[in-house]
Image (cartoon, rainbow, N blue to C red):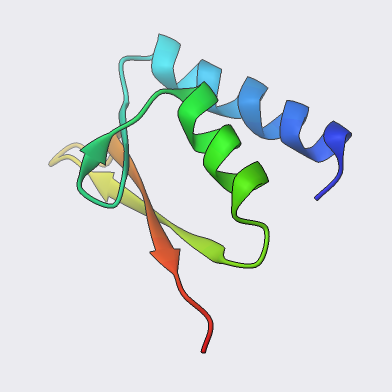
Length: 70
């Protein structure tokens, strides 16, 4: 990922945060900056994004799972 992509991801995640959507990396709460930093530091690993929906069909939580490559 290049710098432009990281900035775009940060802006996207900030907008989720402003809507009150919780974010986590695996089981730990995380801020947009923590998520972007994790992506930057672990470029050899991928993160799978998982949306958690509420009963009204709105995004309640956004979870990034670290997918380790073998």
